[in-house]
Image (cartoon, rainbow, N blue to C red; front, top):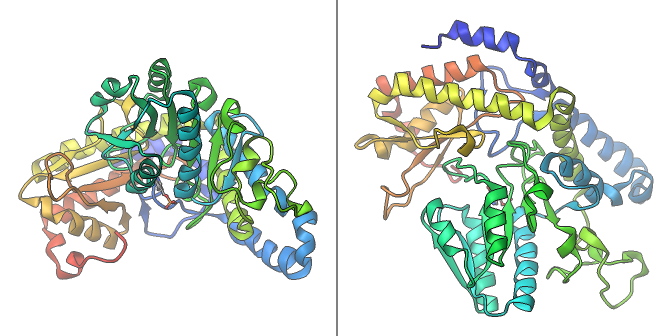
Length: 432
Ligand SMILES: *Cc1c(COP(=O)(O)O)cnc(C)c1O
């Protein structure tokens, strides 16, 4: 059994340990929610302050040129491209993940409708993040197509046939942390004549991603999770160069125009991925996002995403080991894949009946102790298939082994003393 002392030794020997000093982490907090909202980079305050006081306050509108505001979507996009296996000039930062999905799914459907009009299905997973499913539902209606949802990963291969237009998957499942084999699934979908969209919300900055190597068609991702871009940070969008110019994306705003400052009445799309921009970039948010992305690029000299992945797996394996040893008898089950190759950078737990309904309160009690994870509601109609979960993200940039040990110790105490029964832990807030 791993002791707390063993964990201290592992932290002391961890070559990535110094990356933690890039962040302002509150004292007394073990932050296991970087998969939902990344932590604050130390550089962000000064950078945003500089944009406000100097670039906005003093230089005013000149800053679009002098401070390079107009280039932010492409400049930060090029940095994110390095984390996801895309080439420079292929990825831009813009809008939100939901909006970017609307753009790429529209484009993918138009390509599919043009090349193979008989294909009528969009396929995704029922456990995909709801906004992805809602956007797909709307586009399916618009195009007279059907959105088909599979209940498990094993059902995906059977959907790869002549009916499939677009396969839309999230690289790492937001609930279970299941990590898809992007390369194999993309190849199989292509062999069936379909296009593939990858949502990298829980992949970018969390696991190595190779979009070009996998020959993906489109990808989108989130700025405020593992990229540490700050609450509501802009998202990103990538289209394989073979698709980028085939159609307009539907939100044909002026920032995606070939010459926005000629103010012509007709739309002329910009070349390449630039046309996936829509309106004016959110400069303050972009400034913070760039600081977040830079915290990941700082790991490039230490082995980059491959090294971060090794540590992430070591952290999640330790958590699983300790939960199995110490919490199984308290009714806790590991709900994430146990095989490393199938696990993202998070681990989810579920509570066996009759404790199941206590899941929310257990997470609240942990938060009160400074161990911040989150609760994701199950499907009340079928808790067997989709249980309530306690979700814990492990971001190797700043989480250490001793923190993993201590988090499990707190979980043991919350359950064994039934601390979660206290009234204040059982009141649901607006955001869970
Ligand atoms: C977090 C997340 C989103 C968030 O979308 P927003 O437009 O930023 O609200 C979308 N999709 C997935 C898969 C996510 O995990």
